[in-house]
Length: 160
Image 1 (cartoon, rainbow, N blue to C red):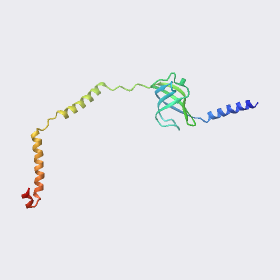
Image 2: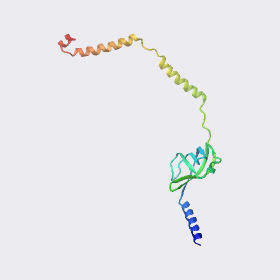
Image 3: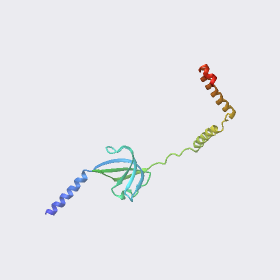
Image 4: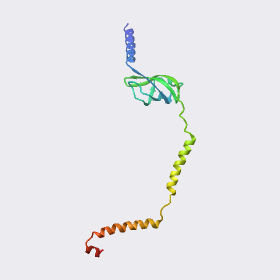
């Protein structure tokens, strides 16, 4: 009789322990599924009272949950948080994420030519001849020196 009561107490205790696990519902797209390590990475929307929108890697309660799940699958899932032990306990495939809209080839070529033209223009613009650059530098130096000498005392001019 005592063993029967012990078993009943253990069963009730285990049932009540699972009853305290909080569960949360979410929707998202599968980024990766790894049945070997019982993990799934999901790009999800806001999971009310659990997490904001983002990409999260979860453990799964059983690798069997990942049997028919692949990258880009749209899913609804349930996350259980049992005192910090978080795991996905249910997954329902709802569809497949549509492929991203491919860029238009003409637009890509036009943008590439525009950038290439801007670079080529910067490289091939005529450079001023070297004698003009040297003359301008010498003129600037003379102008600066002249301004300094104009304000000097007469004896400083004779020493210079």
